[in-house]
Image 1 (cartoon, one colour):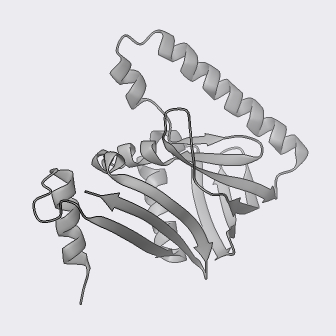
Image 2: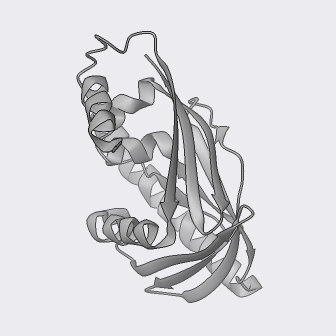
Length: 192
């Protein structure tokens, strides 16, 4: 049986908040994404996202045991990094956060450059936010990604908002994002 039509129906009902027929359900979603489709998705995000416009490409490989290799081609840096996924945590706004740690591949001076660039961007965003009139504008301009010298932080709730899937934020409980057998495995619950 092909589960795609059933999944499409469930997501359509969730988006419209039409819970008739699925009210009271507790659904576990386990979505494996193999390397090639994952890299295609990443390429799409880079081409569609203004905040990722500095990147020429990001390519992920060797997904296994919560670690993976990432090849980054950026306007200022071209690197191959070994990374590790951490358990999902929550920020002060109770939003789910995924942390990807840089295990090796960044030299000391590159860490300093990343840290200074990140600090500059945060300062510029803060400065701009002081001149914005509407809180909604601030909400729209939030970034789903934050990079430091040691890790990349992904705000999963903000990422869903940017992907026009905000309706899921009130229904979803994140279980885990892991790397095993050359695939990224995304696990979450939806309670209706």
